[in-house]
Image 1 (cartoon, rainbow over the protein chains, first blue to last red):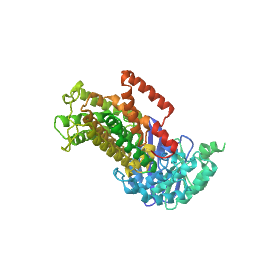
Image 2 (cartoon, chains in turn purple, red; image 1 turned 30 degrees about the horizontal axis):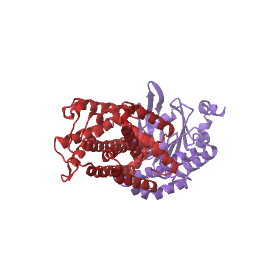
Image 3 (cartoon, rainbow over the protein chains, first blue to last red; image 1 turned 90 degrees about the horizontal axis):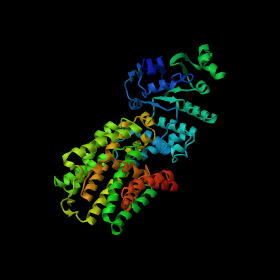
Image 4 (cartoon, rainbow over the protein chains, first blue to last red; image 1 turned 120 degrees about the vertical axis):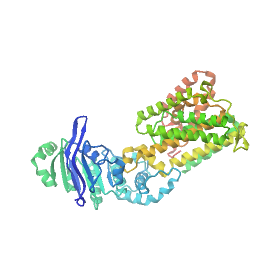
Length: 251
Length: 307
């Protein structure tokens, strides 16, 4: 069973002081697919996401990754298993240069970096790979710019390059196109399409255009619960989904 | 090392080499002790993003234990200072372990509370001499051979120690560890999501910072031949913050300049008695309003090169 599914959850529930943000979510993410979670604001998408990456501890339920129960692991441990997430607000290291941002991820290949007595010139061996990753997301020429000075769209591209640097088996993208201009959205969608080969991607998205073009499977969440699941055609034809989500979107 | 920092380091070394011929050696030694203390503090605030408000505990215990080791146990000065540094390391490990679990203001409050516990311990413990402190600490002879009683001789030892400490801190900041530390400072959640156990890195930075603060305190005890409650009380923690802010948080040379400014102000304004702190406060407010990045921070911004 674990051969087909990278990530599975059972009865995943999160309560915040009595408020149930995520309720009984059973999710199965098939290997090699792009799986999208959509839903109106407050549907529990981001909470769900934080549960999967262990940034939040579930109240109830089980999370399995490659057949292994990871419910009790810490976020850094989950990341070490190959589940790497992005953040809704662009998560870069603003005072590090663009190159250093990617390098610090590549540096993970050394294991822990507790060697405070060694020179950082040791890290120069990761720079070729970092440059290649940056070129891949269209950030060549920006290597020495502090990441905080990049325009928003490029920060997202940097974030994806940093995530890719870890060679994740499962990539979790939290609203990768949030707050972007059309051009930037197209660029990121193209980027995701390019990097999906050989990977499994789970993304939370608000932008339906992105979801339609990218995902193999869509799970619709409303009020913390799964409303429907299927491919885009099935989802967009579902009358319940229309009222809950598409209805509001299309006016 | 980038060229801007190499030039700054050359200027610093030149200043240290020339200073005892122009200024009072004891005054410059005081600057160097506090500069090392502020640099150690800056490792935490500037590069790990942790505002410790209890560094007096490590500086003060370093000072007390070095004084005690030199006076009562008859240690040579280098071993006495090492004793102070080790004491601060152990204390920093215990306190850091407790404090790094909290963020922001809570972290500052916990470090302050723990440091105040150390202060009250020092008020009560017999070995500290209470209000009198440990006085007439012998400077001794370096490695048992070089007599450190003359200020001019001691000066070179303190200068060497300061530079070693400064370069050690430089290496920490510019190491693979330092790289991860800066990443954690910039965005802890993201660093965790890359698989770094951020608490371990913060604890190691805390311990290193405490150790060097302890060595600075120990050196101060040998230079002034006294360890007192002033070394371990909370205004001493405040001074580290003040020096670092004035000089420039997260710059290598900022805390050194900050220490120079504060020690000089205290010496020059001593004639105004109780007004010193008031004047110091006004200058501090002025600096924060006029140049937020601190002296070196602003300079760094202006030349667009790291300092």
